[in-house]
Length: 177
Image (tube, rainbow, N blue to C red):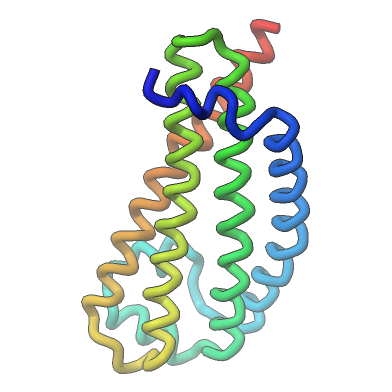
């Protein structure tokens, strides 16, 4: 097995603490982040803007948005990223460790734990490009929007297996109890 360290580290006790801390962070950050996005009057949802691959469209959105409030929302989003990255990592490991040693369910869970962290890292890079665009929201080079969307796409592609594993493997483990 390639991930023998993840069989033991972090300990089950630490993983439970990570889950609790991540949920607390999520509960604190998400409402404030959502509120700032809402009052900024950004006109479209996240999928539409993050996967636009088009700087001209984003410039139109930014032209009717309160950039200062939107920027605060983007900065708060980093707390959200930390919370879901920690949740993907810890919950995937908790579930994976319930499978037998050397089993596919266990090995996949270890990989998924890392994919969840990778999703949050991609989200952080994506937000960095948003913050760069917000420095000159009507005049940034379009390539920045394209790179931003590439990282958003990678993030969402990581979400699918991470959430899928947590749901499916979690149900399988509950049934086999």
